Image (cartoon, rainbow, N blue to C red; front, side):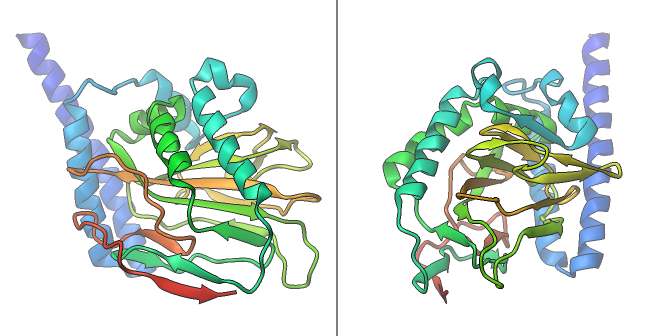
Length: 294
C-alpha cells in the first residue's frame, strides 16, 4: 500500500513539473508570436493528454525516450529499420516517395494549399520544391497503420508523454539550385504549440557533405545522414535547415504530431501551407479550401 501511494505521489510530482516546463514554453511563444488564445488552448490540450497518458501503462517506455530527452532528436535509417521496428513504415514511405518521383514536375498550376478549416497557414514555399496535396487513399491508409505501429512513433509518444495524432502530412520533392529564385531551406525553428513534434523522412543516401537536413544543438551543427533516414525532433526548440540537393531530387515526407486529447488517432492532409489546428478541441471542416497559384 505504501509503495502504491509513493508511486502515485511520484507520478503527480512528475506531472506537475513537466507541466511547468510546457507552461513556460507556452508563455515564451505567446510573448514572441502573440497568439495567446491558440497556445493556451494547446497547453490545456497537452495537459489533458499527459494526464491521461501518465496513469496509463499501455505505451509507457521510458528507456526508448532517453536519447530523445537528452538531445530533442532521434535519427533512424534504413540500415537499422528491421532492428528498430520501422521496416513496414519505411516501405510505405518509399512507395509514396516513388509515387512522387514518377509524377511530372508541373509549374504554374493551381494548388490547394490549405485544405481544412480551423488551421493556421503561412509556411513558405520555394520555386525548387514541388508539393503534393493528396496521397492516394490506399497509400495513406497503409501509412496510417504502419506509422502507428512503428518504433519512431512509440518513441515520440514516450518522449512527449502523450497519445499523439498526425494533424498534417506534407509531401514534396526538393530540387537543386538552378534558377535565381531557387533556395535552400534556411535555418529556423517552427514555433509550434507545446506538445508538438515532427517526423521527417528523406529518400536517398546522405553524408556529412550532402546531408538531408542539419540540426543545430548545443552550439553544434549535426548533419542527418544515412540511407532513407527518419528524423524525430522537437522542431520548435531545435534550429534546423536543409540544403538543396546537388543533383536529382529529394523526396521529403513530413508528419506534424500533436497531443490528441479525446480525439481518435488519424492522419490528416491539411495542405502544404497549413500549420496546425487553431483550436485543438474543435473538429476540422473538410469543405474549407484556399487556393494558391504558383
